[in-house]
Amino acid sequence: MKRNCISLCALLLAACSAVFAQSSRWTSSLVNSEDNAGSGAAQAAPSVAIKTGVLPPLSRVSFGAGVSPLGVGLQASTNLNQHMNLRATGNILKINENNISTNGFNIDADLNLASAGASLDFYPWSRHGFRLSPGVLFYNQNGGTGTFTAQAGTSFTLNDFTYYASSTNPVTGVGTLGLHSQNPAFTITTGWGNTIPRNGGHWSFPFELGIALIGSPAVNVALNSGQVCDSNGLNCVNVASDPTVQANLQAQVDKYRNDLDPLKTYPIVSIGVAYSFRIR
Image (cartoon, rainbow, N blue to C red; front, side, top):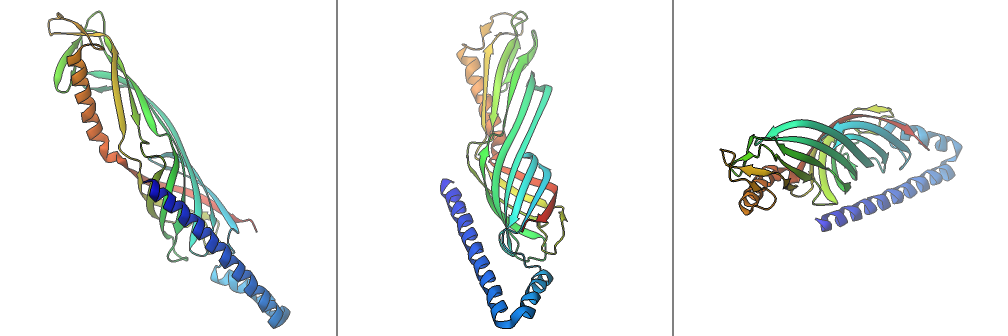
């Protein structure tokens, strides 16, 4: 995966070099036209550029916002040439959810999403909005935390084995979820809507669909206090030190990891709005 990220960076650098080379040829061609054809030809060149929608490289920027499974996002982009834009993105979201019930536990959870990335948007047909976008999440701290509680006298299950929380010493624990085991992470998306319209417009409403290869989610749960007993409330043991409880806990965590493993190809589905303008 690191090789893919390095290759992507090299591709971005090569694209920028090609853009500036194209810009130099465009400028030289315009100067030659002025020298050879006189002032009348020099005045005709800008009208042709505007008519065909050809923009000088790095002449426009756009700023936009949207929503996706990565959170609430902001983005900025600029045009590299007639078919390519360079786009930077940032996403953030915090959600708190209390009293989630699973396997007999009550969970208070916090989801914290924070990521940033860049992509090269390639438009095969400059006058149409369809694009392909290889990219990279170079910053990814997406994840969550939670606290687990089994109320006194209630039952809960670990690895399909039923335990009963002590009536005088309820069970508590903590859990973490990491969605960033591959960091940086390669992304590939497709979509519709050019954030820098080649027809000279200002507003666009981009749609994006793809994946981020973030690696397998990291899931950990620890029961650190309390006792469990048999169904009669007798033969109580400490959850933090009893080997049978800990073995069943780890087996349950493995099931959670298996259930969440598909998220290693994290879905990206976003919709937003962007405004572009000329800077030179």
